[in-house]
Length: 379
Ligand SMILES: Cc1ncc(COP(=O)(O)O)c(C=O)c1O
Image (cartoon, rainbow, N blue to C red; front, side, top):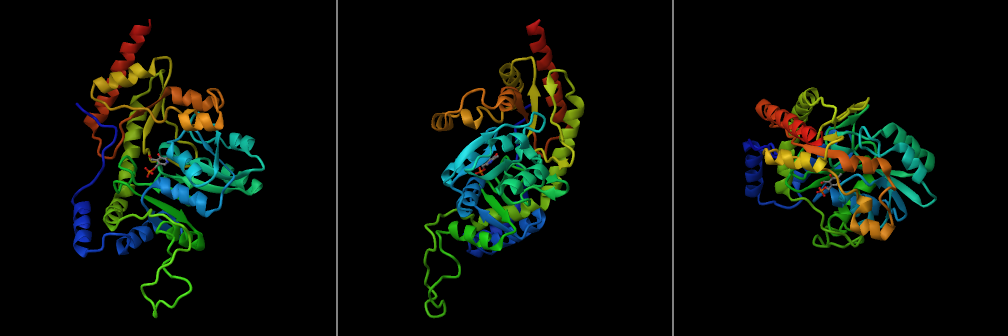
């Protein structure tokens, strides 16, 4: 049996929606984007949602449009895009450690890392579970810091019944491995109308829809840049995909949760620390990650792959030890001890809504077999 790490849930509804856009003749940012943005804003519980071409550009714009040029505290245990966006947005990343159970940023270590140069905290909701937002919001208020949420991996996750991405500026990814996909794509969410307008303008060459300094009736062709902007727009074709995917999101997340509950029940081994759903959190399992103890992780992952299960590792190496960051910011191996412990032991098992019982059982049996084999070898 072959089980991929992830698989999209797309059907004729998405195909039909795309065909309709193609026929409409309007392919770039347009009415379909507006539909996706309004539906997404309603779903997350914010005033505005803005379609963009990726989560990375959403994060970069969040930094740049907030005029953050000092330090941004974020976890090193994340996909490198979170930190790249800080650098590209014009700020300096400062890495904080994580908590072992959730693998999310540790509020106590955030506080230790705050300096007079700190301007923002970028939280990353790892693998589908929210960070401890109550503590982080208190910290940010105490030190007058902005919060940016990298919610790439947590579309639909909640903390105390509030969706991630609604606590401050939220940034989402629609990459194919995520809970909702448009192939490539992203969304920025905010309750701040003028900030939203600035983001939308920056993402479209710096040209605001309402041009300044001229009468549109007199010169309707007039366009001028208010900023040296980018082209970070999402096409209508992808927005149509997003509209259809959003309708299924709650069902897909429920399926992920059911699969995770099944695996949690069956993978009860001394050598495995299972994912932990923290109090107040609704985990949406963008990834199903376990931590391996006492046996070699490499042999465990490669053994599963030999049996057709595309297990993997997210994330290693941690960002602070990756070439650019280690050279530029002079971090060393033992700077973030919990991050080190987690990156050395974490394993990602397949997780997607369409998994069936036969496949889940195959994963369980294969893990059981490989643990047996590796344990025997150790004796
Ligand atoms: C935590 C995190 N941040 C950012 C990104 C980047 O998302 P995108 O590929 O949409 O730019 C990802 C996706 O892989 C991610 O997992």
